[in-house]
Image (tube, rainbow, N blue to C red; front, side, top):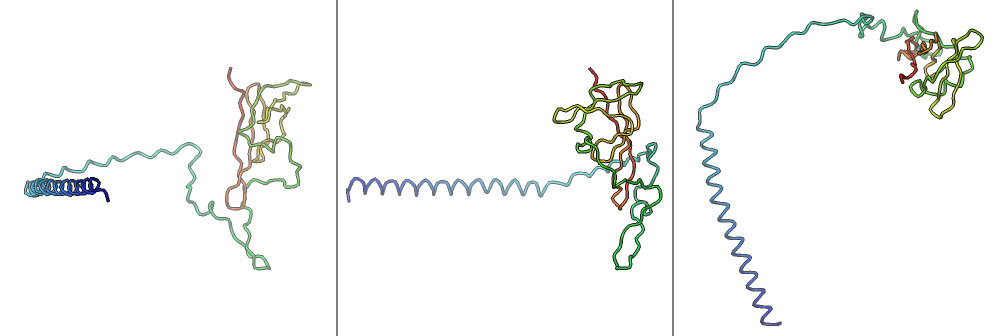
Length: 188
């Protein structure tokens, strides 16, 4: 082995060892300062704890049309009957919306209601029709009584600026409830 390389390696090892030793001595002196600071904090008198803030009470507000208790068990669970086969099925509650399963679906029922847009109206034979644009750009003519949207939305009225519908959505207990919906002509 080359004697010059051997002496360089030895010098490098010694330098590394001296550097590591000096770093260890530096850590031990900082540790003493840290211990002193911790002891100073422990010896200081405790601070005062302030009183908790007073909890404000809020007045409840019932939104009009929302007087029904959302946790009413008569609404949450349908009555259950046992069939002769031992299977259970929900009984339709009075007032639940009915869906005609035999009705042939119309073209616009293939689109979600929020993907349809009103683009105008058409007055033909003293009857007002609405023009609806689908998400793929086609325009369809609809009138009162037509259906649109995925929730069995039946058009109940058409004005120059708006279409009003009644949708039938699941009540999550085997029935359907009706809810109003509308599509408005965008403002220019």
